Length: 219
Image 1: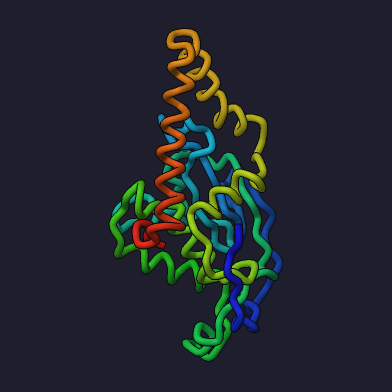
Image 2: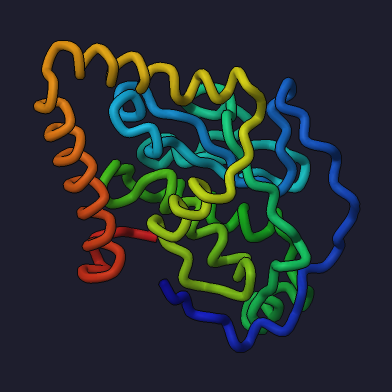
């Protein structure tokens, strides 16, 4: 999978100060992408979940509904997985820097995305929490890329995400294990066919919307 690289982002973020430590008890995850399972959907497909992105002070921002970005209240419960991002990998284009005659900060980029999504309708299939986080990463030109998308983001979390603790693992996977075991007992191979079709349809939609019909997914 190839991603575009920003070629005019030669200005790194200003004002890099030490971050406070991650503190799950206070729901503080400085400069992190955070993830938690969704009710019902994650019981059948445990790799599907709700995501948010955090400010430098650790406060979580997540696109939670039409015209609403939740601040400091992760919509579907406590964080179970996270990835802490490096601010050294953040770049801004010259146009971004010229807006204020200064190189912006991490929080400046998140603030712009928040303001944009406060004017957007919510749709699970076309404009969701993954779209919001991808939009933030594109504003940050994180890792020198400006074409982050929902598929890239979901894959990144799935492969690189760190579990908060053992309880978080159980919260995320135990419902799926129970549903899968009970369903296999009652339905047998029909359950496997259903889960396969469900996963194929859902993943297929986002693959098509991301790479074939790019106007379907609103970043």
